[in-house]
Length: 137
Image (cartoon, rainbow, N blue to C red; front, side, top):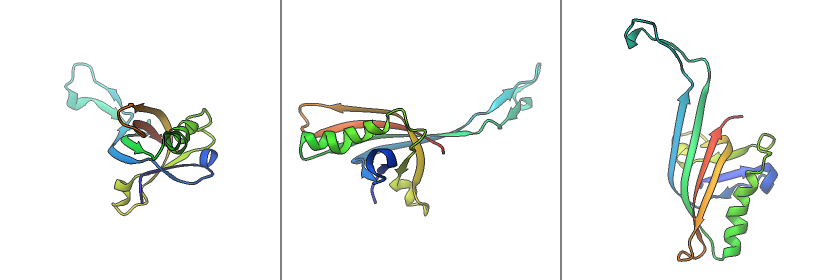
């Protein structure tokens, strides 16, 4: 399997490959509240972990196509159509090959927070991209 995105609203719930993922970064952060006690060292600080956890997934990669039209239609427009203001209604499933090797499915329900891409005329039919996603339901 490959790194893919699947969104029912954009591409009829068919997963599409997102090219060559060169970097996958995940961070899982607890929203911890701290209550330092006056005139006390840090070992006396009261900690609360009751705000939940946020996982952010950041990808950097490269997508290559045979023509510029395929580059736009098969990748750029697909991803840009996901980031369209209706992601609350139509969640996206991101598949991570790395996570799938650990015995799980490797699938995450996400909302795309940011999509940026760079095209240079010296690299015909290739774009370098970055996608930032937030996991949730």
